[in-house]
Image (cartoon, rainbow, N blue to C red; front, side):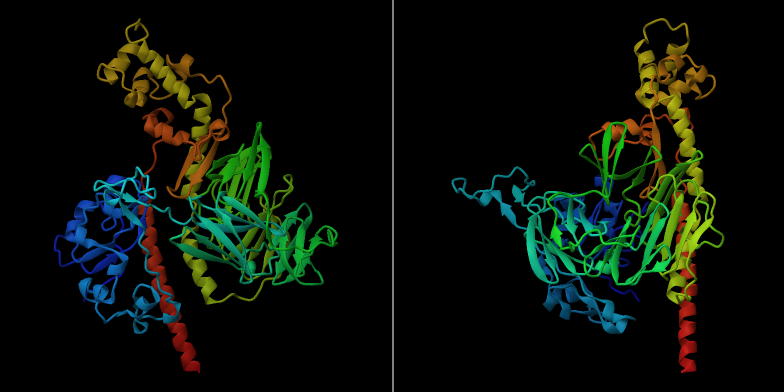
Amino acid sequence: MHQPKLDGLIGNISKEIYRDKSFYYNNYIDANVTVENDSTGSLIIGGRPDENQYITNTYVYKYSTLNGDYVYTTNDNIDDEQYLLRDDLTENMFKNTIGLGTAYWDYASLQEEKYPTIKDTCLYMPELQAGVNLPTDPEIVDLNSLDPSDENTIDSTETNENGIAIQTLEALPEVTIYPISVNEINIDFSSIPENTSFTYYINGQEIETINLTEKTYTFKYNFVDEMEIVISNGANEKTITINPVEIRNEISLVGSDYAYLIGNNLYINGELQSGKYVNVYSRYALNINGQVIDISNGEATSDELVENKLQKTSKPLHTYEYKGSYIETFGTYSKIDGNVKLQIYNVRSGKLSAISSNLDMKIDNYVVDNYNDKEYQTILTNSGEIVDLKEQLQYPDNFLSRNVKQIVQNSHHENTEMMVIYNTGKVIIFNYVNGNVIYETEEKADSGLTDYITGSINSIWSDYEDKQSEYLRSKELIAKLAEMPIEEVLKGVEDNTNNVNGDDSTGIITNLNNSAGGAANPNHSAENINNINPNNGNLSNSNITNNTTSTNEESYITVYNGETGEYEVYSESEILEGKEEMPVSETKKIKENGLESVYNYEQKEEMGIQINGSIIVILIITLIIISLIILKIVILKKKK
């Protein structure tokens, strides 16, 4: 029996779908979709909009978006009658027209301006079903109906093919909240849409409304009061509730001093302190009364108590001066000499490193270092797993890398130490170069089946041997780039191509012409160079060597891209001097200019197979875990 669905079919297919139209039916889609290729994007069949015609009785909310454009203005192979407005979303529409029926769906939620919900009898835990708000149609103005003499006439050049001006509203930005000191928090906004503001509340009381003009706002915060942020653009709004316990920092490691929170109890160098505390950061602790304590001596820094208020200027997490540039690191991005960069930069031991901002990572929970020619970059994922992206840290025996709450690196650069606190409350400090344990609390009681299940599933992703192999390949590429920068390789090819009518006694011109079909072709630059060089890609002995020898010592860094699963190499100078938010990687330049064989750096294409295999393993383990849970419930019932 086919169960009607209230969701989308968006995904990506590489083959034609089953041609029986009675096989896919009774669907409704309301979504904002982002795709890499506009020409193949779709709100029904992702990657193959031409297949939409084989999906029957399927409807789409008219103001859903595809790469920021309303879907009805794009070529999405959807008939006009399939588009629905807010007023169309009635019980009759869902129940009869779309065909959801009454067996599975409850329509009472429509009275609360929410989509139909699944009936409680069909759910294991119905109390978790909150419902999804119905959409709000944007204002649409027909320019052809306006009186040009009317002073209120809208002046807009954004019209569709029917002469309709669309008053577009950017989606509300995503919000990230994190501590930056013992008594301050930052609120990062993913974008700065026009006509957008936010209002903040303390303990339910409205304090102030701010027009959104900055990516980051800094607040003094006592880590006791509940705070709410309401973002609005006039048509839509969303509320973010800040729970002080969830965002507080609980560990600090500075030189030989360390501190941690267990509940509201503060421990400094292993000793329990009197009083109750709500935050620990760097060398300071904040007590429940709003007083800041210096961890090194246990004394209050002043008599002033923390008050919740917006600061005049935003403050970064970290600041660095590197090669004449001023770097500011925030939670979700960085600034270099005032220019926003969509990577997280860090300078330690005199070297620059970068972490991709698209990684699944807890804000400011990472270890970066360069020691004995080894480069370390280790993060804590949002699911509580410690992941080595470059060289593997030296962990103590029987170290558990999951169920982790927070990690912190010793602030003193000469100290190669890391502090970890687990969800169970266990704390450990160790040297990540030799694995020696410096401090460790007693093991807490077993955290139960839930933590075991979470740990088991997360551990599937703990095999990073392939990633580290790719990282080592990127280091080899850096060595080649230091010898043969891409720009100079391309310039060498171009210079020799420009001399095509000159003396070809070296054989270069003949080989270029032969390989490019008698004409200089920049898209065949890798092939051309290989034809020139009998060593097949190694330019050190070729006739182009004199043209491609690096005259400066360019530095490069490796960054793991969380979206593609690949290691990318970037030029430091382009990062530091460029104005763009995202510099172009050397890896991408190699691919775009066809230089893979020159640098012997072809990208592997096995990721899909690895992901599919992992999904199968996850499903198998999930079924086993569910069986164990059911068995445990049955046993408990029998004991009762």
